[in-house]
Amino acid sequence: MTGSVGVTGARGVLGRRIVEALAASGVRVTPFPGDVRNVAEIEPWLREHELDTVIHSAAIVPVRVVATDPGTAVAVNAGGTANLAAACAAGGSQLVYISTAHVYAPSSGVLDESARVAPVSLYGLTKLQGEEWCRRLAPESLILRVFSFFDDRQSEEFMVPSLHHRLVSAEPDAHLQVRGLTSTRDLASAEWLGRVIGSAALSGATGTVNCGTGVGSTVGQVAEILRVATGRTDVDLVPADQDPPTALVAETGRLRQILPQLREFDLTASLTEYVHARSL
Image 1 (tube, helix red, strand yellow):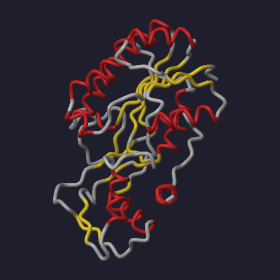
Image 2: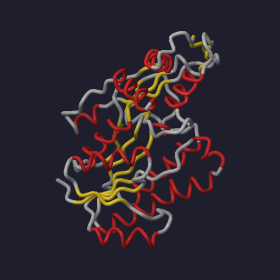
Image 3: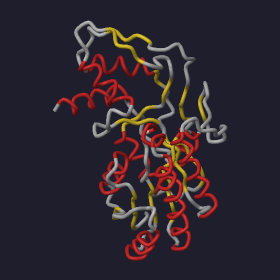
Image 4: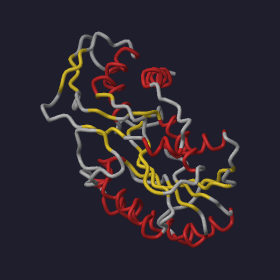
């Protein structure tokens, strides 16, 4: 087992879940307290804590925020990753880079790791640039392309919190317009993904691996689960657009090779727990 693991972005939604999962497994976890754009903060951190593995989850994520300030997003998501990759290679730490399914080109089917990469969003582009820095500077890195997730700490920039807020705030018998009702997503809780990422990081695997459930659910199915869980069955869900449906679903063969005991994810139960947590 890996003796010591460093985590960047440990205060973020997914980073916190990764830290919790590793700590629960008895792993010594050292969050990075600095700015990944600053090499002078990274190298002493690696040396002082003698880190075997660094899980890099620090990033500027919301698509709207990246589009508003792309320079900062590139500096953090690409430049910061380059800094970490170079430092990990020099110091002998394995880098586990948390990338995203948003690096893939639009598709109507299940995506394996060889699928074409052509990000639609600037966020996806910055994360793909981070992948390239990992491959160039730290070839033994593990790159995990994380698919969609939700958490009760997420802002309403994201799908599940947005749908939940709109449902609980809707007028009685409202007709709630939802974009992309027939589009398909591979959706998990950040808690489940945190455990998966923690286990994958300890496996010693390298290369590029999809990190998702391997199961697709339409946005409409997700909204329906939330509608029932919130008790808002009086609200009708209607499509807000006529755009062709898109799909973002992981082929998880490589992930299951690394983690043969991977636990299946129960979307209905987890979304119901999410609604309960948000109501407390």
